[in-house]
Image 1 (cartoon, rainbow, N blue to C red):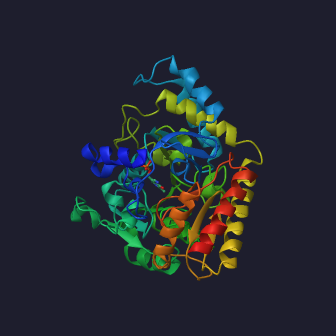
Image 2 (spheres, helix red, strand yellow):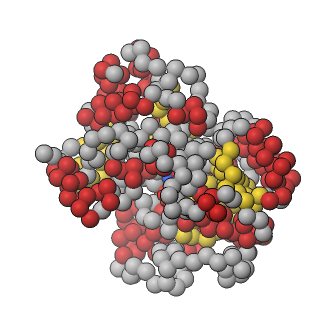
Image 3 (cartoon, rainbow, N blue to C red):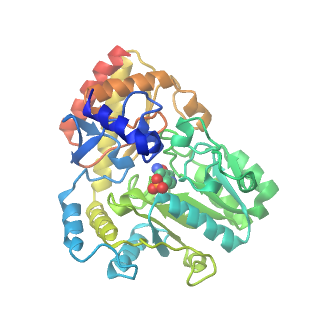
Length: 426
Ligand code: PMP
């Protein structure tokens, strides 16, 4: 029995499913999750001493690789000053200033502790500001696990086929309207009927929780237009895309300005952080300036701010995102060539340094329905063949993949070599 298997067995005694977040359990791909001992650069090392080239990157934050010496140094430097004060620090102002400089639409920002908190709070703000209850989300988009947003959600909720979680009151879910991603006409029809009741549209501008699905040309523009016409707020959930598809996120990449933006992952450099922000006129409705309540004992935690600031300052260097994007293209094209050579129906899609792998003969995948029609069994076999060969992909066919600046030519070539063998064995 491997050490990972032993630890997984022990974990299940007191932790539901042995994990603290469902996708980690490998339920979708089958088998035993690997338990991690440490990580460095592009590599994870498991408790059995095996190394893996990592394309999960803690689900996004580790964009400069694991245990980045500059981030660790920034955290170490703060460590001796104490861990948390529950009172303001200058670090928080540095972070707010930097976020408002980097993300084009942000005039004010509030720090929280996770992506879930960021989207939950942004929604409450949108509802409080507009004095409306209904929200629009898109099928297969995941925005964390708050009640209003766990309706036809992606990620683990999709993997387990439980899109509507028990425990979410029907009274609340009825205020969440779920439309099809990339269906602009459906959006227009919905707003023609209900526009004056809709507080906000929340969207992953590049969907990353039902694999990786870019927005079609007019989709985000349509969202902007219907929100403008009906006085609803447009919320870009950039928890995943923020600082990844471009320095200024998907809003900079596509040139669409949301009213509110939610952030997470990279903004904390690997420590638990989220943020939401946007137009000052809207943000002024948040407590203590306004009546919409939102708070957090550990929000703006000094260690988390130090890690996030160090990471953001590192990745704002000119050329960083272009290089990462080029690397992602190289990986995706390399995979596609090798699948084709092996006669395996296979497609990759990427926006910047965020990518998706699809076992399908479709020329593109643009919606939740198309994503769920891909061949799940092929993905699962591919996943395990790659894992055996020392490549750690997201353990679900419905998650985006992430690359880091620590992935060099050596890791990309090793990944492509492993994939060549895996495709042949499918
Ligand atoms: N929004 C998006 C787009 C996400 O991808 C995620 C998590 N992967 C969340 C929100 C929730 O973030 P967290 O897991 O930090 O609560």
